[in-house]
Image (cartoon, rainbow, N blue to C red; front, side, top):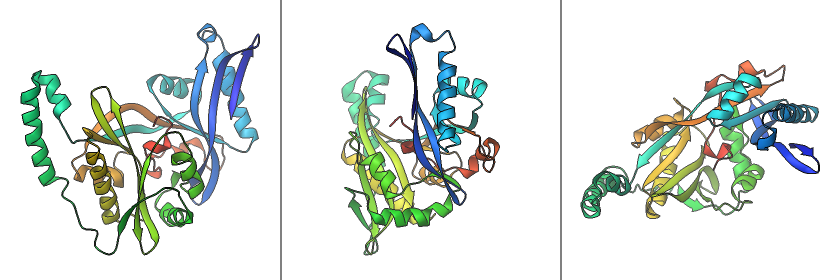
Length: 305
């Protein structure tokens, strides 16, 4: 849903949101994810932005959608929380695991041959201590997912009970988010006796002098550490086969996923992103939704990746 400002036949501003099904306790509510704010430089000194935001808010509420959330950067966080009645749920934590330290060493030592030797020694230690292949036995298989089918609806129905507030990860949403898109994601499923007990979404890309692997999404049927560990192991191995230097994953501080990543030697890093929320719902007001312990989110719930 978008609110657009037109002046003399030209677009001078846009505020855009995406309707998303959100599980809140035992209810499924259509919420709005704010994804874009653009105002022409010539109109930033006036009230154009605030009029657009008010229009977008009214349109959402008229369509029965009382909640809006967003993953902000620093500038939009300040505006939203000070002027638009949003409140912060929590800052986003980025968990980072170094796989190949060559780019860092080359920046520090400026000698490529010496850096390669140190990196080679680091890889040997890493391969021995962190990424030894585990046997899945006969109980589980890792399969690549080309389309999300009804098995993922069953997975969501069972896994959702572990989370009070989360984006509904049914097959329709997952196909829209990760398959019917120009971005090429890799999805690995944890299969057992024809059922899906969890999945992980991965994306590898080049960033300046670093090749980064991202754990965009990960979801399990229940809080079974073995299931999550198998998915994380396979995800890290996949990224390593593509030659990444680092693997990263967004988490909520203190969450189940946060703890499990620490066990695999991921390190916490701060970001300039925060999750914010605003609600006009009488049943689920803003104050209720800002309790961080209620939320489950991953990198894929944002519109950045």
